Image 1 (cartoon, one colour):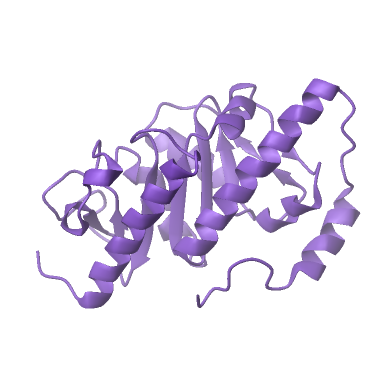
Image 2 (cartoon, rainbow, N blue to C red):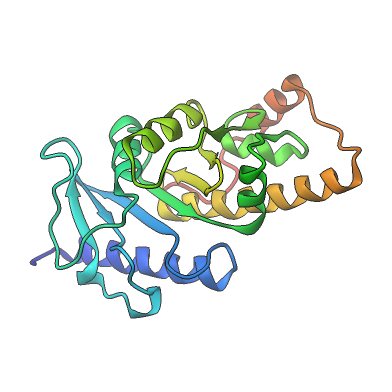
Length: 221
């Protein structure tokens, strides 16, 4: 497969983010997957390959606006390619998608709870709640549609009995949101143990969103 230096660098960056995802404890094994927009295509991690053995050429390339489900490359795309592709198709503001099974996000998703505004950093996801998408089997059209619904006007969601998705204008922004989401989930989990969480109001979160501006990694980083 021939590719430009820019595409090769993007593939390297995806692999680096995968390695970070496991080294940081955000994910375990090969259960997570990452994709990024490249021109009119999506570059996505292959199915079942340990991150430390992944090479740039192994990542699959899928067209975004035609030949739905087709791919180029020596290995099959992640089994979750469908929601990655559907998100990039539906969200022109999105250039990267991170999916993982972090412990606290997944625990809350197993309880099928939304993540409420127990901390002002919920504003990083576009509103006063991060929704938990309804359950559907991995890799299915139903799961993809459920995720798109939960992501409406948001940049992250939980997946019932499964894990989480974070999206971003860049790979760095998507991974930053994934880390922030797991941090909030851990905080929320502990307040559930205490039994006396105070949830911020929609008005308080709206004010935080307005004050955020360009908080977080810059889009052109």
